[in-house]
Amino acid sequence: MLYKELVIKHPDGLKSRTAALFVQTAGCYESQILIESENKKVNAKSIMGVLSLKIRCGESIYVLANGKDEKEALDALEELAEKTE
Image (cartoon, rainbow, N blue to C red; front, side):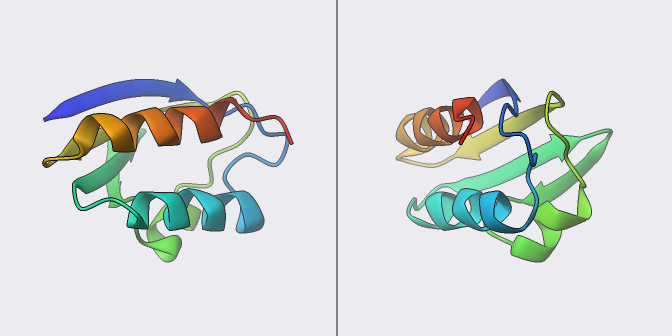
């Protein structure tokens, strides 16, 4: 299992369109992927779970991945978190 702290840099945070893109990207990987924010963990492949965290721009999240493609999944999600557009 790997985990990484990510800072969301998109001005909208992880809301609607950006959350959907995050979930879509997580869904491309076989690994189990979780997002932890303020002691709450949700499945990164669940749009409702991600939206329930109400993550704003500048907030940190922990992304945990467990599976054969865990490194690739974390790298792709980190790249998304870094995007500002």
